[in-house]
View 1 (cartoon, rainbow, N blue to C red):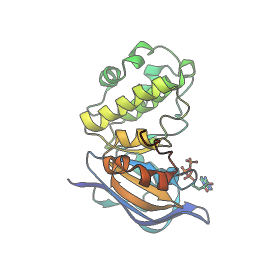
View 2 (cartoon, rainbow, N blue to C red):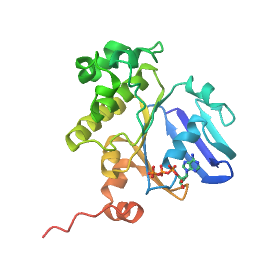
View 3 (cartoon, rainbow, N blue to C red):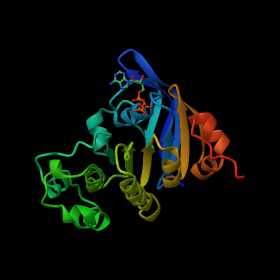
Length: 239
Ligand SMILES: Nc1ncnc2c1ncn2[C@@H]1O[C@H](COP(=O)(O)OP(=O)(O)OP(=O)(O)O)[C@@H](O)[C@H]1O
């Protein structure tokens, strides 16, 4: 599989504060990656660095075979990075449909296809952004990213603050995007079990660097490793 994205020994941060320390990983076309780690280890900073919003002092970022390390943020946005920010950033005074069409770029994802994927958005198409539930806002944030026809979808804690039933629905949608549609994605998540179910590959960060990389299935199957890396409670032994 062709390489889509590579971070090679990237050192990056904000001003003089270094957050990512020689961080490296690769992602192939059509693959999905879970980025896991405890609070404050640099998961969001990894996404911000890819988007060009941090100061990179060492290392290289390669995207579709090009070195984009020095590219400004506005140039990166146009090359197929579909950003779904943690705060969702739905436009509150625009309708669902306007939120979607205002960012549209030509490609296979258009309004009808997004509505087909998220029928709830079609039902709510005349509602304003600020009239939506948290789950609907998240669907809209993902729908909006899809309307830009990205090569890579970046999801920053998509399940945060959502009711369990909505979490399951969204997880299924994201899995369909990765598996069914073959859209590459990076999923930053606090819920490792969920994130591992949705993705092919996983990395775990500690203090801004990768301390574990494997398939998501392998990490999900190793409860002791998962617990050691992330402090996830292990299931009690069977009686
Ligand atoms: N804009 C910023 N300016 C300065 N420091 C920042 C900024 N954003 C984040 N940091 C710092 O960078 C470090 C990593 O934060 P980051 O948000 O990337 O971690 P995270 O793993 O995503 O954590 P969380 O799960 O809590 O969101 C933290 O120490 C944080 O305080």
